[in-house]
Image (cartoon, rainbow, N blue to C red; front, side, top):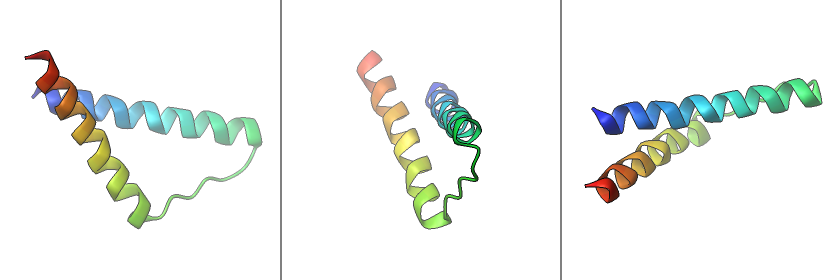
Length: 55
């Protein structure tokens, strides 16, 4: 469960950064599914790797 929470945290931080960037540039940011899905997978992979290092 710790990996899931950490992965969600990474995704939320990424979304907040993108929203902040969009507010600064006053533009729309569109991320297609073929880019977004691998980013979600990478976020959970990084979370799993971080959890495994902790043990």
